Image (cartoon, rainbow, N blue to C red; front, side):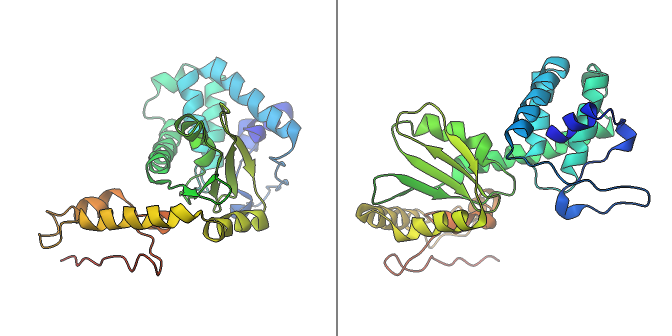
Length: 267
């Protein structure tokens, strides 16, 4: 968002500016690569909000929502897709409603749809652990930066609790104090992200291990062993619970106290 705004402030034409992730930057002949903006700087954050609010007023709330969702995507094409989409929306607000097959709209719609799927996975599959200090901690690694988008959901659901939701993949965390209406979403450095992840295992409350064991035992029992795979829900589990998300899910996590996870053959 801030980079789009910087382009306008510098009076750089759309065709003369291309946005890309720093780790995917490959300038073509004649192009000059500029250093990325510091997304933690207050003036950059303020510019991002100004651009988003201006786009919302110009192109509409739904268009701004799609652009924001696309910004959370991990794909290397996301920055330039959002840039072209917002340029079109600022120049021709009605085009975002009329040109349903425009490649610029389709690119952002595709990114936003994927992020929405990851956001729903975040709401469904985050598992909080009870810690010794009576707070709650969850570690989750989605394929998009969804913690900032899901933070308010957990603030509403767990309003009376003090909790932290950590995404070490994107180095993002949401912190919530008891009875606060909102979460504080912050960026983490690599060391702090690692320490927060390690804290989940090192500082579990005494009752957390018992609750995990009970939950895992229940989950194993409802698998109805002895029936065919499709009858005991294994195919549904495989389809709706991605393997990449199971590392931090209580149902699939096993310790010496709870034993190894059950194995199921697929034919």
